[in-house]
View 1 (spheres, rainbow, N blue to C red):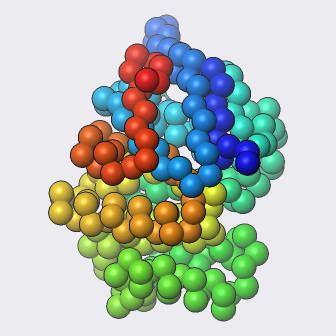
View 2 (spheres, helix red, strand yellow):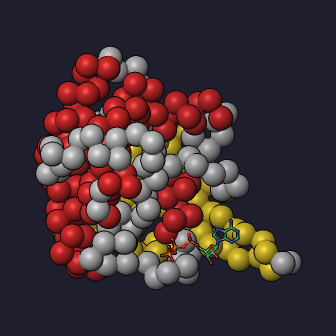
Length: 223
Ligand SMILES: Nc1ncnc2c1ncn2[C@@H]1O[C@H](COP(=O)(O)OP(=O)(O)OP(=O)(O)O)[C@@H](O)[C@H]1O
């Protein structure tokens, strides 16, 4: 079975005002199907930068990035978009839901883009949102939902196409402790239930301990 993620000697530097910082200095990481990995590291250690690399959201990286056995760092924009659409789901710290669409539609849209028929996409959206305790909020827009509810819609959206890999950047970072625990619990249950792998950046050691494996980013390398 091909790894879901294979990073070899991943590097990234930023130059600002004539000063270059080497944020990632040679990251090697392999994630197998279904494996849930916590990415820990202090603020500024490069967790988001690493997730952007794996999510094929930015260029400028050195080294190799393979997603589901496909070499990605040298592919063109269309091939990267296809890899993202076919294999990846994202949950960001801020939800990035579409403000003019209700909760159900926010979960339906990525499925329509992937070619799922509308009736099937709506049924899947309702199933996911109900599993996350939002069966009574299907027609609410993001502005009519609480922070925890918005984040749960974002979780449902990320899982809608059953991606082989879910990438999450501090998915519960903006929530209070009780809500954060509840959303993470539901998130992990659904990810495990559908057999997806996940790479989840967090500062929180307690949440990280609930995942299958913990990797730590410090001074540009993983331990
Ligand atoms: N586009 C950019 N230009 C210049 N420097 C950048 C850029 N993006 C990130 N950096 C720098 O790279 C370092 C790592 O940033 P990154 O956001 O990946 O850290 P992080 O571990 O996710 O932090 P946090 O936990 O605070 O979100 C920081 O020092 C940041 O200032």
